[in-house]
Length: 219
Image (cartoon, rainbow, N blue to C red; front, side, top):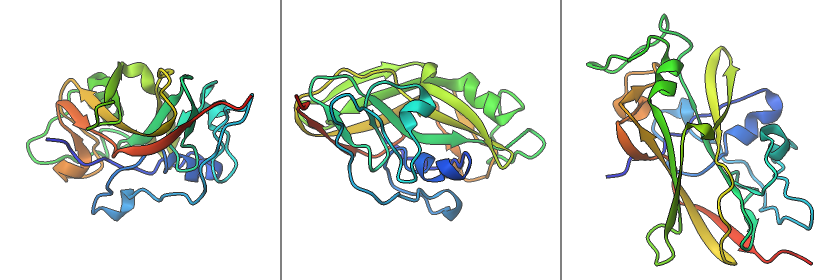
């Protein structure tokens, strides 16, 4: 049984507000505070020598995260080159600022007092599946190194994720789905809703099936 994607808005400065609220797709929860606000824009087609993912408000995600390959994630960064490596980004994860401000569902006790430290302790990595449910389905798994940045936003810590380079695919339409792997249950300390505020032990689906296109590289 898969769990609906947990979508949180991580606003790292005004320039990154759109970027980090659109790092993936998936159903939004009833809690309006954390609904994903999809940026408007058209897919960027990489050109020779230019793999940069530019957010709708002009932020270069490749420079921000020191990534050379094309990025798949934000709604206007959904194109990669045929048989060339690419990188997957997906929604950030945030927690309460400290043990002093954290609240949890009944019966849950964190392993570490600080909520984000508790997440770091339990986060094992991700599995990224391409073309899920089709004959072409394939998966790659990565460890905790996919957490690239931890940034305070209005006093709350948020983690930004990006995979290492993923092997290239054949030309055509594809999807990418991200699953989190957790050693133990983790709750973020930001609320008491088990579904909204917690990640269960084991593997849980974290995003929806993000569509993207693989094109032949221009000569």
